[in-house]
Image (cartoon, rainbow, N blue to C red):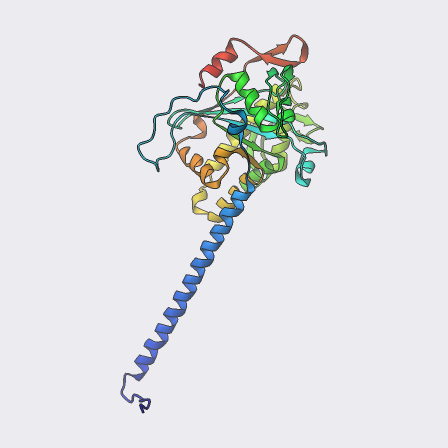
Length: 351
């Protein structure tokens, strides 16, 4: 039988110290491993949560091949290379009142939804410049026949208000109508609702906008003196929706405010180094995706991140904002129609 041996030399204290350090290192190692496992688990949860925020619509499958052609794209030499070709994205702001927050921000509980804001975002080849074209929602257009989600198709409608396309056939009809009006293929579709926009502005710490005239709009609940203002999400949304308190009360005045907001938001995002603040980056991503609907080509966090990374060299100063040229409609002074040939020339420049 072996009996334990007790050391009597002068190295006993040193051995015990080494033993304590070894145990401490093992405990620290276990704690670090546990933290890494928890971190990976949290990252996985966050990724799934952000992915699940996104609603998608299979627009390509719904519309089929009867669409404007895609521009020729030079294939990348590397599968991992970021996309750099020209791209057209239809961006809509929906006035949906679905959900308590949207009803509160929208000021009512009306059913259905329309495209409150419509912008075609054209990214130049190389992704270092962009043009944002606003389409007035009061524009009278020929709305093409659109497939219904429940089956069948809508009838062709002549002299229909542009924003009715979304109300009648949702994102699919909105995309088909824009392509019919412009002759430009929409590569992607992005829609954000009231609450998603307001949350994004709040997470970014608000947005600073300068107005050229006093705004007094009881419908949007916004009253501002001319000048520079720092707005929270609720007031920024009210500014984006204001039309009756400025200019002649038409949609054209509101578009000018929306374009100011776009530039201001781009400046606000550029001013924040989100990559050094993962917690804030997550909050921004959560706000962006919470009220987001996309086509199936952008319906994952990975695809959205890849799109964002491809725009790393695009500065706010390289973004041009314009409005589709329009004139008063002969049939209704409260509506507008495309002004030709200026409108056609603008859309041709984006093909």
